[in-house]
Image: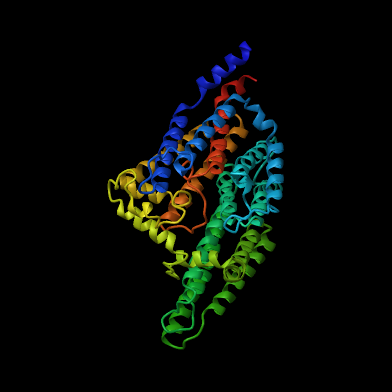
Length: 490
């Protein structure tokens, strides 16, 4: 027993207590926020297990115990059994699809009497472990398409199962792992392609029905086609280093588009989009011919980017109107400003904005928020709990919470960069990517800046599944980091 005690002593001595302190501070702020969100005028005991605030203490206590158990396990356990843990969680996700219990239209919850668990929250750490195991293996190179496809498969499998549970918001969280891919060497062109798709969708859908002056040209469609051509030309200059062709493409596409716009606006009105489409086809042909002549594969890949961009944009409208559920479509339209719907899909965001704005600089004080006490904000202790922070703690309290999250992210980056083994570094960046995505999207949707996809704010939103899931993510990494010196001696 003596050697084990000494080893545990070394682990706790090398544990990053700054991160633990940030974790505890976020738990404390989170509990105060749950109290504020769940409190009703006349309540006399906020610690009772019959209240949300009382039950949150149970979740916090069990999370602290779970963190302690994780720290006591050997860090090699997570590396050795990464695939096993991942397979078990995949199986659980698959079985959950056939779960007879539906909660708010989703089959993502397993119900055991009074206890409800959401496997999607636990699948995050399992996916991070499996990705770290694969990408940390000898000879893995994410720049090779075969290896990149294998890494993507690990991410996409749980996403598919979660979508099948009708829990699209939780599935989208797994996109965050692509930030970790980028850190580990994924070509920047892939990340840029993802960003470009978002730009196409937002610009195209938002301005699709806006006409250019008095012409039949759609501003949204025309601008997106021009963006595709400009992005293509820029990629030729950056990745092929063919500056001459880049400037020729920029000059020709921008010049023809501008001339067509002016001619349509002041001479003969006509739809310029077919002309821009023909120009894009010509650009693709030029790139393919350049590829055949030089045998430089990058020209062909850029042409595929152009083809994919056009296909994605023209399919976006179909997906929005035919594939997405009505409530998802309305949420996107509200976000883009195409609909107000203050009594429907836009109600939550509108009320949360009122609650945050009413807090002012210093807030209304603990348990004194009127918007939250009168239950104007739906899901105010889960998805929209940040509005409680804004109303009761004001701008200063909200800024403090965001600074704590920023410190956590920066601390995770530092811990990840000091890992002696690639497994620890990759897992660490997977963890911080998940936290960054959750904080950015959750706070953004409360402020009306991002779509409402229903994901919790780490350590704040009420519930055991999310709190346990985030604790597992964080403390497994802390345990791996605490054993880094022992790893060097093995």
